[in-house]
Image 1 (tube, rainbow, N blue to C red):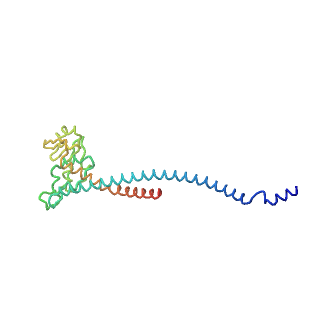
Image 2: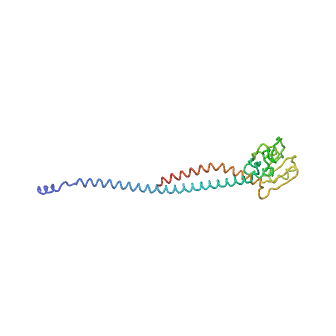
Image 3: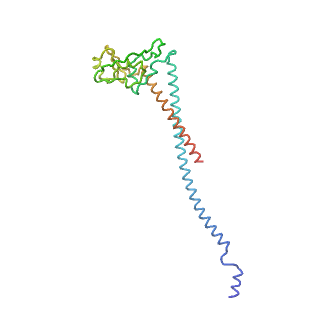
Length: 245
């Protein structure tokens, strides 16, 4: 027994410290591996989410950029049209009026070709303006003036124009006082002297120009908003690209 114990002692300790240390390191490595695999899975999920968000942001940025480009092109085209329509050195009154949306045909019917006259007294034909006298509009009609914004020179003319439903025009025309006119939103005209003009299927040149002017005004107002949204979308897309990378 003593000899056996002596021989066992010569073999060294029963538990090898190097093996114990290696076992501890192995346990730590296995735990780190589990954490690393979990982190990889999480980063894969993050990458997939980032890819999806980046695609959506890119599509949104492209759509807004397309909208901006379309609006800019339309605004330029309308501006060129108005520049070509301008006669001589004088702007016509049609460039200075602003009907509410949907009342372009009514205003064009109320003023007709007189909208082509200028506001500048130096022009061959121009609006001088006159005193605005109160008018007794027929019952069942409403003044057109609150629906449009016109220069002061056109106020006297507009004071004698009333807006009516299309089906009521013929009946109300019989009670018009001298100088008064009735118009419908569609562009029909009834005048105090018995003159009657129906709205054509296609809008008149004046009505079309008023519609285009309204459209240009809305475009200019929308351009700033759309440009800001497009810039914000582009920045968001760039940030998501950086995150994805």
